[in-house]
Image (cartoon, rainbow, N blue to C red):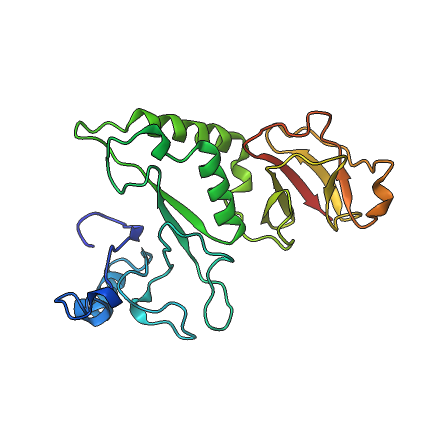
Length: 261
């Protein structure tokens, strides 16, 4: 904490109380077993701006969280259904941690053990849409090389991020409910529609009629016309975007930038 300049984050892994460990020497390996409160106070005295995870055993869901509950919770390989909240229903900062290939280090796996680029993109978007962050693990082999399959997947995700990162960085939960065709992320008055599924007929944005100033394709900034189809009178509260005959520009996730009035 005092030898390496400013430290941004300390990610503890891990401290636990677990039913299956009762009666063993590891039965109470949590919280003050590690003098956690003292440890946290020491760290913050040396690094006032440091961010600390929740794996010293504190309960972040309390109305007044334990000192050693950290700054964010870290669900492992399990997506929260609605994000993370405390006992009062307030949002808690959180970060999903998961693996790229079902292992927390290098393993010479078969290709079908890997998540696809589309899987990774969709999980990232889901985390942001629920107010969270995402950490994904890769492991180098004994020579220090990242496996080729990991590189291929991450490069494709990076390709998508290069043109769609505005819908991720600085964004969080949307004021709109989850749509049936994908997810929303939001940054201020800018709503990002992440479209996974093709639709039948005109593309509907539920409840947004008269609430949109501009609609663009995020990838290249091209403006998309709002155009109510001939049969759109059945849903007068919904806005309709003309995506053309093809329906989707990117099958992994087509992102629209919607500027709200």
